[in-house]
Image 1 (cartoon, chains in turn red, brown, cyan, yellow):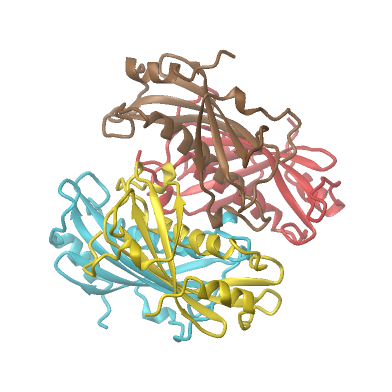
Image 2 (cartoon, chains in turn red, cyan, yellow, orange; image 1 turned 180 degrees about the vertical axis):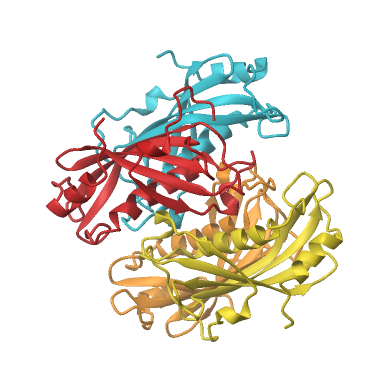
Length: 146
Length: 146
Length: 146
Length: 146
């Protein structure tokens, strides 16, 4: 709601998905509770990954969140429509960093922006393992150089 | 789960509160979903504020989150008991920064650590306003110099 | 998933709204957790009420849930699209009963069906009060005789 | 909040567990949102099942909700402590019906009461299968004849 960094714009993102708000996203202060933004972020990243059949979220492999964060520029209320923007900012051997933002109605400026760091892990050993080529290529398709 | 920064210890925090896990905190990967940690953080900060009757969360005044973040060191599963640690790291005119951590069972090292920046706002104008003395004193009671 | 009552069909409902699934709607069993259906139901009923400016959810008046329930016919997974159907089944002096159902993708048969009983209450006294005419008329617009 | 059936008392239940409330359990009406009660119910039933190592929630077997419901007698607010009561009301070949209630602070009368019908299913085939003896015995340990 009050972060001083300038809000990002839609053009800075490469993939978008709509999120419908739920009545109990709204807390006693009358706006979307902060924890809910991470549900939107999580759903956006996994939604993008699931646009291709990469076998993530199965018995074999998982994407595990190592770190995330959010800056809240403007509150979001129940009547709002929400569109989430996503980009990949960095791809390492077995981890990737995403940039995310929440756009309300037809706003060009984000109401909130955040980041996620995902680590690709083997579901049996719980250890990081290098991205398979199809996963890496999928991440590269929305990579924006810093 | 994989953040490289060393996990913090209980002694670094000044106020603690227990959180019971819920079955649907656990996502398809078998561990507590990242968004749920922010419910724990939010509840810890507001729980601390509500140990005194400061009139927060009423028609007069609210604490609004400007920014937050979390680093995930180790996954948390359904059987775990959870204790949250809290400290205040900085107090400004109308905003405060908190440090938080989630301790599992009897662990001395945090399974996750995070931060929250709260802004004190007037509920009518939605503008920041200076902390009243009782709020400031309450925050100071768990202040840890950086 | 296994309820023996026959699943209802789209034609039995009068108002529809889309709901986007979230990654952490899915629990460890790989399907949408039962508690989340009530978020969908709640959002559907309030979403319908908010299509007209009736002053619900303000300092003056609230709709409070007296009772609800759900039968689960078939599990819902992350990739699914969800459309919620709503009808009003009964209108009393200060309470109403709704029928609801969740339709997956292009299915004609509901994957889950439920009901809600709402009571109209004064926010100050927390006591039931008779529906104002605009609220009653709005409810009647989707009334289906039992 | 307003259901006319008399609220049940603690003595009618056989197993109890504490639940800590979270800040965002509270919706814009200032009380715990109805969908959250089902998180409490779900956690209570699974918490009871997990007091013995029955292999539920693994790759082999799951308890799937066929039907549930709740009647809300009195609203619950953030400061409240919550204790959930559980009993088994019926045990069939592969399904069981539970009775549940939420007790606030030291109240003898439930603030909400509900039911769950669970079906024991094979995780591979998704078909019901008869309760193994250890599961049946565990359910019988809190059975209350109707």
